[in-house]
Length: 431
Ligand SMILES: Cc1cc2nc3c(=O)[nH]c(=O)nc-3n(C[C@H](O)[C@H](O)[C@H](O)COP(=O)(O)OP(=O)(O)OC[C@H]3O[C@@H](n4cnc5c(N)ncnc54)[C@H](O)[C@@H]3O)c2cc1C
Image (cartoon, rainbow, N blue to C red):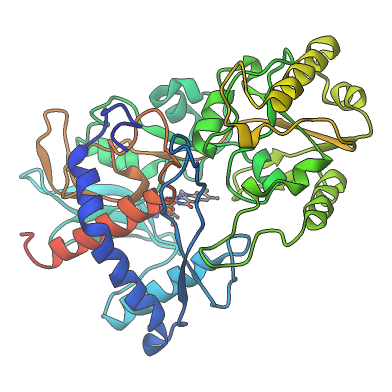
């Protein structure tokens, strides 16, 4: 991961994740599998399947765990995370925690020595209450992705790209308290391309033919979704077009299993075709996380010419690209981008399909400089006493972009492992 991020990240935090995530995840699994003891639901841990590249270049490492079998869903298309949150809440309450919902943090409170001692919050009825932290205040208010001004200032190359969840109020409170931004100077977005999910029903890149606005290829299509999403941002208008044919439904490379030892995402090629039909006839948009609608208009046509027309691509150039690409498929060697031969699948069997691909960022990550105890630091790297951060706020975990070469690790590292360790530290050593 340090290599994927050009070493412009915090190696100490990554090694902490490498060394302690097993302990943290085992703690989570123990709590999730026995949650009925505290009034929750017992859940079964599974591991999501990852994208494997036999050449070992563009694949993913195993990463994402899910907890299934609860009332909110049985797979990623449902909402099993809610069951995990509900169980954690039950565990916290059982341990004596006092939980306030709808309470909005407005301002950190420092004492005369500069120590952060509390936070002023607006309660749902409008009253402002100061909550004090015996050992500190832990900020975990998520990202600043819906704050266009902050995105433009802190990640200028993401200006105008849609996405994000929260408006960065917690970041601003930390800056008021003296926090510096990441040592790399810039937080990193979690860029994906969601139209690919509409093709494969999985959070993974599309490995067929991708062309830019000029109708020419621009990349080796064999990639993980984060880096595939980034590579299309090199194109004019930040877009590309995926093109594939009926035979792609027979392609086993991406018909992976949802979970290790689980059922395939699609049982048969006809199930794939039926799913594409739904997408072709669907509303043409998907709702993403309450932060906006993503255009996912899938086109189907009887001829390649018709498809190219409907996608609005330059005809001569695109047809020449398809012909060239088909030649690479036939000869088993990609003369332009060296895509591995197994994925050289020609575009020649009707009906033909296409979709415009655009970037979308799930969230920003980072923005708050902190050490490997998650203690927030100022511009001289001095700790601001009493102030901690977790989750998407934690700085210097990624550079340029979050990488799905190791999927699920924002939750796995900055939320779960660092959360577990910070909680333990506050409950024991911290003064
Ligand atoms: C659709 C989607 C899918 C994702 N999938 C993955 C994945 O598979 N793996 C992964 O690692 N990451 C994933 N992410 C990124 C994910 O958001 C983070 O990894 C994770 O949720 C970060 O947790 P967090 O606690 O930092 O922030 P959040 O989960 O965003 O929580 C922030 C909380 O702070 C609250 N808050 C904000 N401001 C205030 C305030 N002023 N006062 C009080 N409360 C406040 C919010 O209400 C919210 O409850 C996904 C994101 C999206 C949008």
